[in-house]
Image (cartoon, rainbow, N blue to C red; front, side):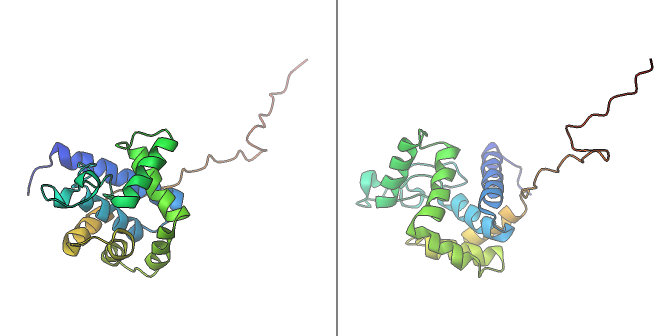
Length: 184
């Protein structure tokens, strides 16, 4: 077994956070979030290359600065939309908040939200990874097996667990504190 590196730990931290945020904020199932996280992990090389289209580095792509950007390696008009969204919301485009925020924005407020309906049909993390790649990212060379492997890996990351509510006292609402009897 290969030892865990600092890069692996960074990847797992970001992947875990993204998985929990998607589950909590978007109310998505574990396999659906794993499909998104696995694709982001693949696109950004373990969430480590947020700038510079990881899979086409060194080639003249004819793209804006030859680079995609972010966890999902947004390109062309989507890259510009990401950068504009991050700037308008006061985020550094390299931050988790900008990357996750734009992902959520696209999934809720743009035509890209169509992928959510398709994700409802996914039964496994492999299904979800395929759907996210085909309907949301639309990459030139999908490398689907790698995306699916990373989605299955994301299934082993912690799930979001809602906070456990504090039990209510049996003698009244939580702000009620019975006074002790005063002897006169």
